[in-house]
Length: 408
Length: 112
Image (cartoon, rainbow over all chains, first blue to last red; front, side, top):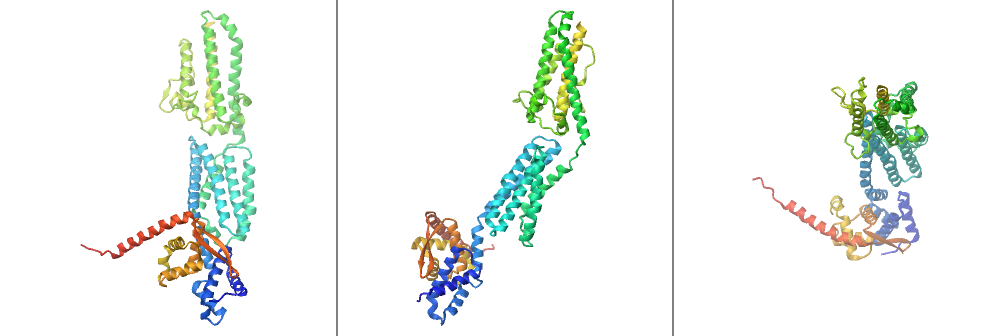
């Protein structure tokens, strides 16, 4: 058994590197292994070169590179589990976005929650984790930069989509910025640095998620949009109804004292009636405040009115647990309003005689539109609910007017 | 000599078992040891030995220490605590597996 010279060792090391062994650990192992084999077998050969060729042929007939490939393969197998988890996260996120979009168009509840949760999952969990995985499994720096830009732009586009759907400020900046980054930075890098088959390497799950979310985005773009003029007129209508009630209410308050002195019955029931009317009006005013708070609007800033420039948005959205009959835990529910309104009318007595609008007929039940609550409140767009509440307030003031005129 | 396919699933168990008995070994030593113990019937190629060793190291079952020997680095592999435990389990599992395979191969098909 002989010992190899420094030169011979270096020769083998050079051969290993030339054949593409880049992992230092593996290089040390292979070098030592070949040297050991050579030292043992050298005696059977006439020259070092002959011995080396024979040993190399014996131990690694397909070249050293194959050993490195096999090692890398074994070391990255563990990411398969991570990939599976990632796929599950991605599929869950995409499903929530798809269902959220469908629910939104069907005006069903939890649409917003699904959209926010789904988009956040994709933008803040799925895509960043995919990016980390891709950075771990990509060797070249340019590839890392390319993938990072791609995933971050995807994340940004997703957040932009969420902002747009939720009508949050800054949506356009985020979405446009991401799309520009994707087209200007990612795509050229992708074309320049990825092989021909790169596009085929994108996993079917990842590409399906991308296609589904893009389809949802398209749906929102295709959704019917009203003209600015139509939106404006709806806003004006809300404002008019509100104003009519307020003016009528103010007028009523100003004349109450006069009418009370003129009350021919002198039973004091006029004050009681006024008290009840005020109570009911302010109860409805509280309902409006609740609705505005639910929409994250400041009731004080809007004068407890539905902001007229957003009337159209509320004309289509149904996100009101306020009037769902089952919500007993909610301080105000539709049943409460119904009971209070009926009590006020029975207090008023039936002798008022005049015709009353159907919106006051809480016991009405029609085949086509169902019970009073269903017809005016439950599952109605917020715009409709809000205006109906104001109409009821207006009618309460009218009833009190009428009663006072009759009694004086 | 046995086919590489047969050896594939058992190599890491063999390595763990050898390391459990010998303490620390370097790659060539492991290959030679297997060769002698198998009466030259199992020859482990570098192409399967080193990927397996690196995988075991990555899994935290073995650790390495380097030593300079004749102008080159020699890496000695030894079991970690986790590796010793796994070694026993895997050897046991392989024994049971061999018994099961025997059972299958020895069974006489009956067509009654």
